[in-house]
Length: 441
Ligand code: UGA
Image (tube, rainbow, N blue to C red):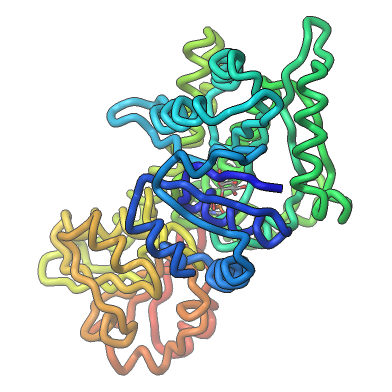
């Protein structure tokens, strides 16, 4: 099937390549010429494991093209809207201008029976508004949120946990005939993963939009819950990693997303919970989500606590102290530094007077662009050279596997701060280091 993908960022580029790998003829559209150039050449414009291979494979078959001109979508029957919805500057609300611009630009190319598929994360009510805008074209809108994780985006797109289709419904809540026809077309697009047994939830627009933000809010809540327990452990003397293991054995709770540390960052969880609160406020049900404000605060407090811990380890003052921060990205296997806890802590330490050197396997270029005040060093042994404190901010495998004895020879002070609770305290202490972490004795 000929399909278009509007927006070729972390979501759209992977979606376009994945759909082409399923055998569809895909055109990806983005306003950023450099991004399009890279994609055309089979290069991923950002670090995402598996994406370069997928781009080359799909591109070689001729079924995947990219362009900046929206007219190239002509002839596609299904159009995926994959643009970003960042947080508005100075507000909690999501900025919908890219979504609105995408849909408006599609309108002249839509024919009756075409399907526009919304994948961007939007406040509930957006789909209803966009569907009304599309009505005169005879095209149908389906809301089909995306649940991919950066670092696993290819796997998550080709083998998702579930699909959710939000269809237009009548007054009884039953999908309209146009909705049923759109569903059939989308089933064709996803025929391979559906035949693999991927669960499908068919619902209305409101539910589909809410599923996405509810899922991200739940994940953020789990992380902040365990980080609140870390705060308690710090005062009461417990070990939050053992606590997480112990409660995680209860299948109703589960161990996933209970890793205490510097908390959540990235382009999704932080802005999604804020946009959700803002939308609840607009709908007059802000009380339902006031707990998310606390989730956000707990998350922010972890960064501050890490700075305090570093100050303590530095003997009360950062003056003349050199701190190596391992990790700049918001999580491993990504080059994304948006709202990165590691980078935020590095910045806070620098502003508090420390000499900070940041290293990261993939994120230095992006980090430098947003935090040019920090010093960067690609080589980890160089980054830690003469450091008084080594702070692990992002749990890249290469940092988890560092040899404390080898590192000991490069640094000035044997102090390690584990911001992700992934290093083995026994091993580091045996090599002569003082090991400190969030939520652990
Ligand atoms: C998140 C969701 O997990 C995806 O399902 C969703 O599709 C995506 O947002 C989105 O809305 O597009 P992602 O932002 O890639 O995915 O990152 P996560 O893996 O959720 O991690 C978010 C942050 O939480 C990271 O900073 C990570 O270090 C932190 N985290 C995660 C913890 O601090 N503890 C944990 O136990 C797990």
